[in-house]
Amino acid sequence: MKTIAAALAGGRFVTRWTFVAVFAVSLIVLAPLPAALTPVERTTVSLMTAATFAAAWGLVAVIERRVSAPVARAAIVATALVVTAILRPVGQDALSLALGLPAPTPDTLPLRAATNLAVWTIALIGTAVLVGAARATRETDALLRAVLAQLRSSADRVADFRVEAHRAVSAAAAAIGAAQPVTTDDVRALATQLRTHAHALGALADGLPSQPTAPAARARPPRGDFRLPPVGLTAAVYGVAVFPYAVRTIAPIDLALGLSATVVLGLLADTVPRLPRLRRARVAGGAIFAVAVVAVGVVLAAIGAAQGVPFPASAVPALAYPALAAALARWRGGARTLAVERRRLSGAIAERVRADDLGTRAVRAGLHEAAERLHRDGQGAAVQFVLRHPDPGPDELAAFRAELAAVADGVRRALDAPATGAGAASLDALLATWARAMPVDAHVTDAARGALRTDPALARDVIDVVAEGLLNAAKHARERAAAVTVELRATAGGPRLDVRVASPGAPPRGAALRAGARAHALGARLRDAGDTAVLEARFAIAETDVVSAEHSAEGSPSPA
Image 1 (cartoon, rainbow, N blue to C red):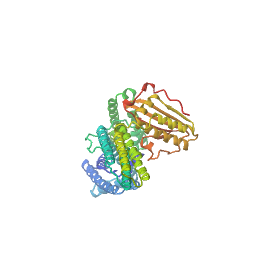
Image 2: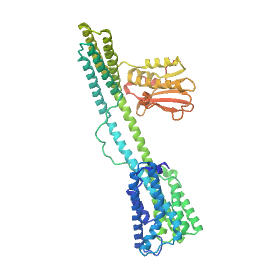
Image 3: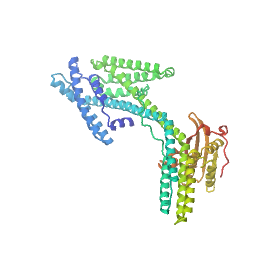
Image 4: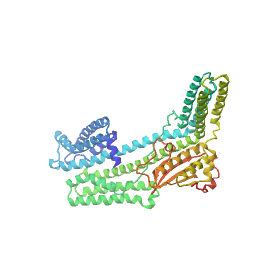
């Protein structure tokens, strides 16, 4: 239903394939019925009716593309579908009479209108759904290829990010080294300049590497995977479409026989290809399904002819049933392909983010360290100098310039060796602090500790997630308590550090991390695990950061 609603409200219900369906259905399924018509006369009336019908839907296409509200678009398309379907037999009869040809009696119009409504609803909505699925697959595939191109160029982006970081840090250090203040006003101006550089370095550290500007290579969109339609769906849709026509053309006993044959034969055609032996051979199953639905169509056509349905109406099932089955198989296969492509896209985006994070983590840590040195040492020294020396002399200024030189040297070295910062000890301190306020059951494996010790930036990120989880536990948990787990795991994509903070009580419905929260930016997510709220995150780590992975089951004692 969601797919149908999206097709009605998407603004692209009418496409060139709509007009293909209009002419195909007009010439085959809903061609004029009177037996006195010759094939040429029947074709002429069908083409003229189809042209009129297509013109009406051309107007609908113009209108739906000019309306921006989805609900209004859906209402316009649905109304047009009902009105054009009901009026179509009236128009067809008017054309026949204008050409001096026989037409059905007026008393058949209600059932003919019902037949048209059923057939056109299935045909036009089905066409729109198939076209929409194909378009969505192409768009998803194009986006996937763009993301994969970014993923392939991740090393280039990381290298560019490092160059940009070195340039920014060098500029900040040069600004300090070039400073030659002679008055307190000069020192105040320098403090403002250092603050600006510190903010710029921090913003650069929190940003992502720039995206490549080269377009992704063109590639053919993926072909839809073959998928058997749900059991009984083809027979059900076909029965709904032909029921109004059958009610007015054949006897009740023949109608019951025809519908029963449709259901039984349709179920056989859907079931046989699903036999265990055939399910292991998709090509064979598809071939048997194709043969089966063609056979069903031929048998239904023979039943119709035996019941007195005139040609060519009796031959319609031989074409309509296989075409409907193929359309439903294509729809299901397209939906499967779209789902697979979207999963690939999601995985590619996640992998790109992990690659960028892993490649730039040390550089970002250095930028944060440089920004902190500018803010803490450089700007702090300037502010303290103004407070201590309102009227500085040459000696005081010389000492201050020497202090600035030391700060500049520290800023330059921060990017190359950002070894300071949070580590396993800092995580232990955080856990111990919270354990004084509430029970905290902590389990940090030895391998995880090794990774935290060798990667301060990773430790900082882990601490941010754990701090967010403990704060949520203190504020929202049914009982003020938390269980913290930090462990190293081997995955197909390389080693990952899993962080988990669980607290008693399920989170409120719809609860989520704030979009601006640091933990949210790190990819953490809040989920409901039964009667427990769980905040969890996973971090990629470099292979060289893996220490004592064989001891990953061992943990630290609880600080509680």
